[in-house]
Length: 230
Image (cartoon, rainbow, N blue to C red):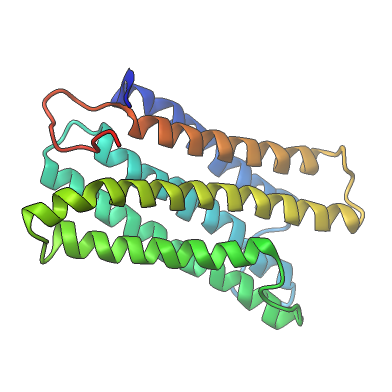
């Protein structure tokens, strides 16, 4: 299955959504939630790093990594390196983002891993890490045989998209969870902050959707090594 739209052209849509999502999550956590801090007597400032890194670092950069291998009109080896590096950055920032949630909970006396969001989050980051390591070993270094790479590619794409879609869904679940906590603590359900969080979740979902659409769009004609239709 392929969408008869050039991947490079289609990728402009998620790029715009990425900028919008990044601005929205920063405005929320800096303007409405008071800012970001690694160490602070106000433990909420530590937690604020979590949604920023998970959206910008994990979801947005991870999406760029996926699209780069399909949309960029570059040589295969160059795209492979960009794909690998961007996924590594996303994975590292995702791990740091999860750590800040644990750090906030531990310093605030809040239990860890009690919600579906947290369970899915751990599962996603573990699967993402396994996917990256397998991709590195088979497609980059030391590299598998031609047969192994050929057999692995469809599954690499399929599992990668599954993990990414799960990550996008869990990010939206996390925004819902945080907003529910805030509203239960007195935040106006129809106020500016509530609307901002809801629209951030919508933009996140749309971004994830267009990342997936880009994977199934038409690769540059001069390139025969991008994702193959599954």
